[in-house]
Length: 211
Image (tube, rainbow, N blue to C red; front, side, top):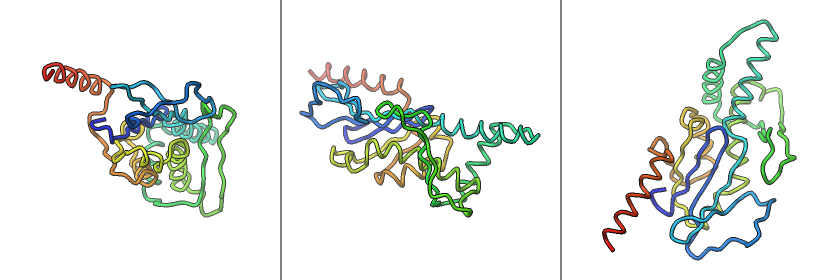
């Protein structure tokens, strides 16, 4: 986070959305295990709000593995990398869908018994493009249900920084992030944790010199 008004969205194997809480915020002394947002001590006596979903790139990987297994059962062999690229291409051409996928195949920390589901199925929404678009949208919407953009806005967030391997190579996920979180969204910057640690140390050194 370059500024306190930034939120960071990481989509790799799992998903995390984090932002710094306004100055003076104090979380409840006893955390609620059913709450989707957790608060951690952060710099300068502030707190970091984190919504962490168990379902991210691993859901897409599960879907790819399922397709590959189906094709093997039909006597066909296709590389998983080929399936992944083809399904993202199909979803990119399918700009919208009425199909709804709740992708929580692994449950969530606050809802451990929740399973995945598919609803609003019609014969016109069964193409690879429709299903992949709905799956990507479901991953982002699941996170949005845990920490909505309206809440981020109330906390003063003005920009979302996107990171993570699953997000960086999936244009459809990027589109769905921009749809769900109508802030300026920045992709493709240096957002590795090591970069953040280096920035913190540089800022501390600057503060020590100024004092």
